[in-house]
Image 1 (cartoon, one colour):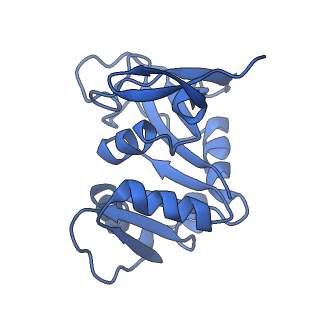
Image 2 (image 1 turned 90 degrees about the vertical axis):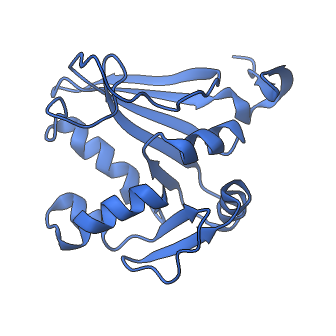
Length: 194
């Protein structure tokens, strides 16, 4: 069983609405793409993200398209999706239960882009193993923020700076750890020693 990795790009002040702040090229881009290039990796997305990606990537070319277009994709949705194009399979109904089953059956990593409702639900259910925040060198001000209304303790795994000015912060949600105290009705996991 692989890991479920949630990855998102944002500004220093946490804005996730992609705009002119997004650094599209550089050494961080190769590192970000490598998440999707691991053995048996698959993409996990919600319906809205899937529709946006599917409207762009199938006709795109280049290194990202070469990786994303052939890889399997799983789309979580509360509504019936029917047959999907772009090498995608629907996870209909309960996303948490569906993703739990997918994680148990899928050998490679599942990579989920974005930090909206689906990501929040999966983190709070203890299904997300790692969070990747690609911090772009810009303070943006107004804009959407990640994981609206979520409260999740995390532990820093890695901080890596790239020549492009982007910094990667990798965190582990502590909801994946042994049972511990609760916060807002969620059982937290106590950090492991060391």
